[in-house]
Amino acid sequence: MTQPKFSIVAPAYNEEETLPEFYRHVREVMDGLGEPWELVLVNDGSTDHTLEVMRRLHEQDHRVRIVDFARNFGHQIAITAGMDHARGEAVVTIDCDLQDPPEVIPDLIARWREGYHVVYGVRSEREGETWFKLFTARLFYRLISALTDVEIPMEAGDFRLLDRQVVEDLRRMRERRRFIRAMTSWVGYRQIGVPYARHPRFAGETKYPFRKMFRLALDAITGFSDLPLRLSWICGIILLGLGVLLGLVLLALRLAGSAPLAGQGLMLTAALILSGTQLVFLGIIGEYLARIYDEARDRPLYTVREHIGFDDET
Ligand code: UDP
Ligand code: MG
Image (cartoon, rainbow, N blue to C red; front, top):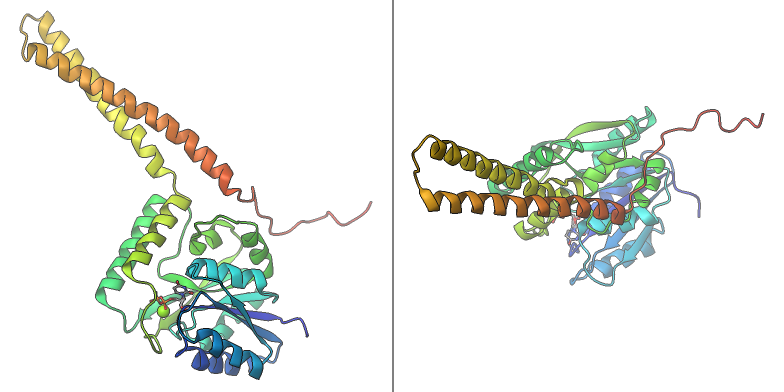
């Protein structure tokens, strides 16, 4: 089998209705480019006939390869498995419901040939999605960009092209809770967006109910922000500050001869100072936890675009 130049990676969960049409589109677009390609389909524990459909496609066309999960592991893990098995110099991840049109792939490839390492699709329009989905999606992007330090392009989903070099870096990031959008931003390199109109689903319904979106949002925030762990610090310092302030005011008043609140004031001061101190110590534990978490994720320390001058043996 010839080494493919391009790999198309598509996760599928109960997509028996969309797959044949998706394959037809991909084949037409990719054959038009005139270079060897492969389609890596990941069956994410589907309960319908997705696997049978995939097998049929593979028998028709050996460029279709299948990774069949033993159960449902979720979209982000399915994409990861697809990237692990892809062999192309450029790897395109795309949903198989035809919401991300395969016809845009040549545009992504054109940018890649210009020297970009990551070319991501930016949804300029979203047809056929409920206002609730659009609203929660927008909220999600806002929240994540406010809370995390990686820059995640607005309206970019998981339709993107990655250079082999970036794929290898991502493969070194084995964290379990994966938010690939932020991970691809984290690695760096030259990145650019390509606008496209997102179509309605070809068939079937979304496999991303609110519950899964919410979990993804949590994974995104906990994966790329220590802020929740630091919140305790901030609250603690505020309470402690209030306690000390109240104590000083009461002391000053007492010295001046008046004693409002008397014993109650003392209790309130003590309560503020004590709970503030507790929160500050929780914050300190949070700091250690953040560091342990960072080590546990075991991300590469750095990513390298190019090594220059290391090959001359002089
Ligand atoms: N998907 C998957 N595993 C899941 C959920 C979804 O592999 O647990 C796939 C699904 O088959 C599709 C892609 O991920 O190819 C995106 O899912 P979907 O289209 O349902 O999400 P939406 O576009 O509505 O956000
Ligand atoms: Mg979809």
